[in-house]
Amino acid sequence: MLHTSIRKTFACAAIGGSLVLAASTASAVELRGWNIHVEDYPVSIAMESFMEEVTERTGGEITGQIYHNGVLGSQPDAIEQIRLGVIDFGEFSLGPMGQSIPETNVVSLPFIFSSIPQMYELMDGEVGEAIGAGMIEKGIVPLGWYDAGARSFYNSVRPINTPADVEGLKVRVMSNDLFVGMVEAMDGNATPMAFAEVYQSIKTGVVDGAENNPPSYESTSHFEVAQYYSLTEHLIIPECLCMSLKTWETLTPEQQTILKEAGHASALLQRELWQAREAASMEIVQAGGTIVNTIEDKAPFQEAMAPVYDQFLADNPDLADLVNMIRNAE
Ligand code: BDP
Image 1 (tube, rainbow, N blue to C red):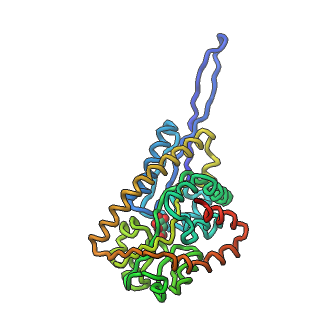
Image 2: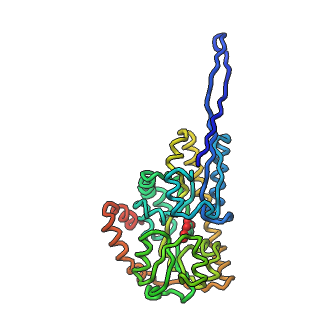
């Protein structure tokens, strides 16, 4: 919730020998920030650095409190809350956003980006702008694109080497029909579920596994209960530091510029931290007993995703250009 307190300051100025009393209004704004991750996660550190920069550059006019660890609720709920302005800002995966903002779904299509550097380049350019415009229309203002690496499958049953290995596995996915379709295209059973519930669900056998990037697989301890980690790298989904449009509209143009600049700077920091954390996480999970397998030929997985693309383009014909822009990019 946005807290605004108005302080009136009175300035006296002597003009032409007479005393003029002028009243200027300065608003102190305190923002509430949502984050799903643990405090030492690259996202969390970058968010804190964003807030520090904003406070410093606004001379303390804008301060904020970031609630880490998902204590303000699950990601799908938080997306609704940021749209309503109940939460002022947050860091979101574009994955669960796709359910209400179709443009963001374009980057949740499996294997759409060919590499992480390509993802950065496109998100910092026209593709990011087109997606951002869709978000703003739904009440969410992007301030910086964060990295979440590539997601791969993990489970407690067997290593995955081909799409046929997914058959019959119960796999948790993020809340988005697109990801249900993705797992079903390989004859797996998909269960959309909140991030916070996955550990217990794997442990108790409600699901056999899930899919995520190395830092999330590690920071949630999922690796302790699902020891086969198969590097399918099927999803490169960017993330976003963003602000509620409702909050955004209460700020001055100068404050908005500071937020945008600090958002972008925090994204650059986050991307750097991400690389280091990914390497560290891979070491931790392997030391903890994870059996990692790489997949030499990803073509069968890519081919298996054809129905996912067909369905998406049938449902969203107006997004075909954006999909092609990414697919045809160098
Ligand atoms: C992580 C994302 C986070 C998602 C989570 C998930 O950073 O935003 O909530 O995956 O799978 O990689 O739900």
